[in-house]
Image (cartoon, rainbow, N blue to C red):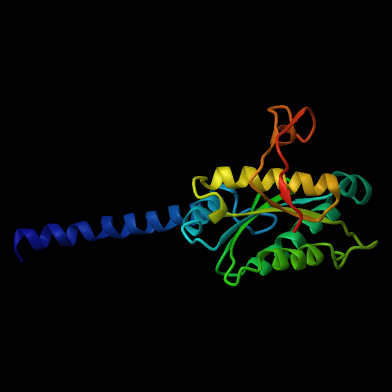
Length: 216
């Protein structure tokens, strides 16, 4: 056995140990990118996958917010609130499908990127809005609410990255919530929130630019 072979053989245990360590680290990272309650991707995990999906011109960015969630928590308890969040996440992920991605950004706010193969995003999201409004099974009394959706076609704003598209979807979602419209698509106008507005806690001043778009 020559010297090189001896060195290589002696290095095998270290290489195997390093491979196991890398595998463990990847597992920890994947766990960290999953929300423990809903199983959806966290903001970081969602951002990575969504950014890749935006390379597809058919991509649609969606933001969803559970209506009156604090009232449900206060009235029925946190267990009911958790059940509602879990049901919302499951329904959203199922509707988005394997070709897209869904994530929980925090609290009662969810985001998704779906691939609109047939140009029917408005119809798909109208159906999703109805699905998300169904009562949560296994809760007594039955817990139900509505979910406001804002969405935008990435192709309509080719200069925007994911952050910009989420801002547009967010403003459209907020407009839908205020109008009780269910869903709203971002148009070519903007509806800006100030730094003390919705993004900072949904209270405070707002600055309205030209109309946000069309109800879809």
